[in-house]
Image 1: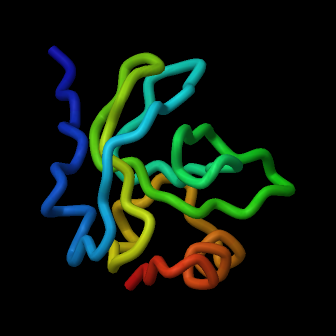
Image 2: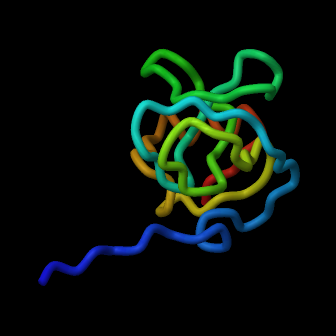
Length: 101
């Protein structure tokens, strides 16, 4: 029997959510809470950023398919619970009002 690690919950990712709202999220595969996102239309919709794009949001729910979900666009998140975070993504998030500690 294999043990599956549970994904973090909201409180384990978001330390302080200054601006969090519901938006349309486009994904091609399941994404865990904490996934960096990008919007190009002022927050109406978000998607997974390309390597050359700067993320400006954090997914606040586990998402199995494209759907409406909560997105953090300003606040403080736990760096260790942000999937695939790099020093550059940390800087990009900071420039967009999201502090990863």
